[in-house]
Length: 149
Image (cartoon, rainbow, N blue to C red; front, side, top):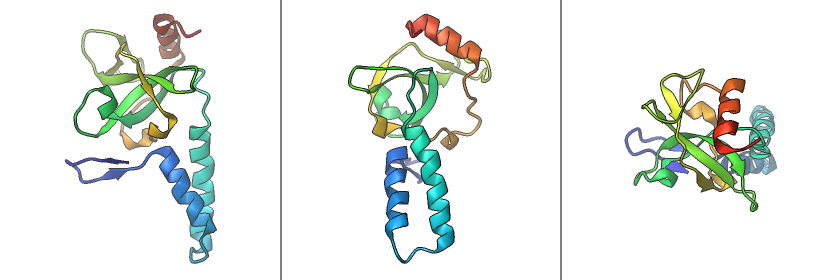
């Protein structure tokens, strides 16, 4: 869980949400509408959790993994998976003069720094508004730079 001190909001990882919605389905005091919603959300969240990451993929994680002392949401691109099935991720930052500029989002770029993340640290991309998905051109550039073919 990430708690943003500035906004006062809590953000839960995909795996934390899976646990929450799974427990909702087991409870007897939950209405049928809420159980239906929980089933639908579980399908969506399990698809995110089971992603193979064989292509560069935009995800959200905690910024503390990239050196920020306080927890907040950070967009990053998974460029591969190591032999322990941990994600190799590069942070996406506001545009500067270096690294890969994303085609659909000219205000952001992908740094060349690679950090190792556990799958439990992945959040939904919907938590950052205006975040564009990667184009085939973005994926091609990322593969060329990071050697993932």
